[in-house]
Structure formats: structure tokens, C-alpha cells
Image (cartoon, rainbow, N blue to C red; front, side):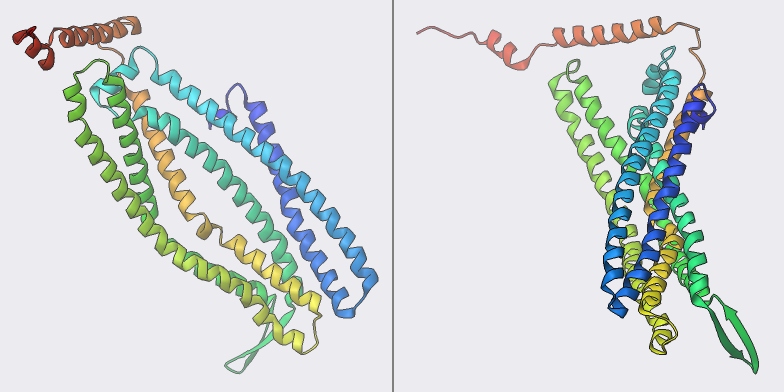
Length: 378
């Protein structure tokens, strides 16, 4: 969180505040649509053409407002993502690329794929965290708004339990809470393997990229035979990557199987629950549709953990890898001889020169055979 406490904290908090304000405006759009749908369906039920034209104009205004809010929100969100990523990347680079520390990381094997962690895991951690933070705030705002709407539309239902008469106000709210609670519990149980699978996949992706980069970088300093011998290792890394991908797919498939059916059921459940009141004539068609939309919005807000289980797992895995890199860099000891980075670089250059001299001194079999059997002119 150094981005919000460092030298640019005023800029960081300004971006965050702008994103929060735009998220509130974004959440106001579904509420306006819910109120608008009630008036629209009431006008249709009453066959009131004048009100229908009026509500058409209101719909146009809601659409225009939504366009402006969504565009401004996208710009603010992406600016916050890239600024946070740049700040975190710069801080890690400041720790990684001093006094030959990057050289020691590669030579001592203290941590795997530091370049992949900086390039990919920092990106996933920052971008996904902003996305999840925005979606969580958005769902909380929807939950507060539509809970109030659904509570007012539910009325009070009379229940008899063991000879006792009970009055349950806002019964549709309690049904929505129970419905979403059961779904979240089942999804949490099915999504447990996702974090481990996502972490494993990120590690294997980084290993594969690092293996390819090592072959490319060493291509100019090692014999061709050694490059050919590196192919089995790269192929093994790719097969391990496929295995990690398959494991993540299996865990994700279990979650999708449940969440997809649960989402479809949430669209039909509120209409079925509120239909008896409409048939009895106690509510209008507009109120029925408003109840259905409010119920669906509320259950979707409560289902935030279900829909974001995979992204939470990926963000957690990336944050773990970035935290490990940062911790290793902080705890890593300086050069034991206190040599500056220039000397460490000089050592690496000498090693490369020695490797090139060895390569030049090594005879190429094809050329050697030509010297042993010179061509004869006939």
C-alpha cells in the first residue's frame, strides 16, 4: 500500500476517490432502471400511451447518463491500475537492480523467475485487485439499495408455526439472503482447489517463459550442441504447464457447473415467489417486475464471492509471488566482499568472454574433417 502513503499519495487518493464517486453513480443506474421498469409495466398494463411515451424519454436519459458514467469510470479505473502497477514495479526494480542483486538472484537460485514475477504477477496483482475492489463496492451499493426496495415491496407475510401466529416483514429479503447464502457456501466448497491450482499454473507459466528466455540469451555464448540439449528441458516445462492448466480447468469446471445453473434459477425464482400476489390482485404487473429485478440484483450482489472465486484465487496467487519476491529482496544480504555493482558486472563480463574464447577454441567437427581430408583437384 506504499502507493497511497508515498510521495504521490495525494494523486493516488484523488484517483481512488474519483473511482469511488463514479462507482456510486454507476450503482445508481440499476436503481433508476428498477424504478423506471415499474412505471413502464404499469403503463403497459393500463394501456396508457401517454405515460409510455414519457417513460421512453426517461429511458433515453438513463442510457445517456450511463454512457457518460461508464466512460469516465473506465478511464479512472485504468489510470489507477497503471499508476499503481508503475509504482510497485519501480519499487521492486529499485531493490532488484542494485549492487548486483539481480546477478546473485540468477546465480544463487534464491528465487525462481524474478523477471516473470515483476512483469506478470505485479500486473495481475494490481489490475485484478482494482477490478475486485470496484466490483465489491459496486455490489455492496447494490445490496444496500435493493434490500431497501425489496423490503418495501415484500410487505408482511403471516406464518403459523406450532399454533403460533408470526408476522414476517420483508420476507422476500430473507428468501434472497438464504438463497444467496446457500449458493455462496456451495461455491466456496467447490472453489477451494482454485487457489492452489492458480498458484501452480502461474509458477509453471513463469518457468516456461524463463526456460525459453535462458535458451535465447545463452544462444550466443554456448555451442549449438548445448542449445539442442536444452530442448528436452523446455519441453518438460511445457508439459508441466499443461498439467497445471488441466488441474485449474478441472477445478474451474466444478464451479462453473454449479454457478451457471444457480444464475439461471435466480431469474425465475422471484417471479414464482411473487406470482401468487399478482394473481390475487394485490400487486400490479409493474410491481411484480420490479420485485423480480430487485430480487435478482440483490442475489447477484450477494453472489459476489461465487462469481469472483477464480479472480480472487488468481489475485491471491500473484500477490503471494510478489510478496515472496519483495521479502527475498529485502532479506537478501549485500555482496560479502562489499564490491560495487560495477565489479559484479565485470565478473559476469569476464565469464562471458571466457565462454566465448572456449567456443572459438573448440573446433567444429565439419571444419576439422575438411582440414584432415583436403579436396583434390582432378
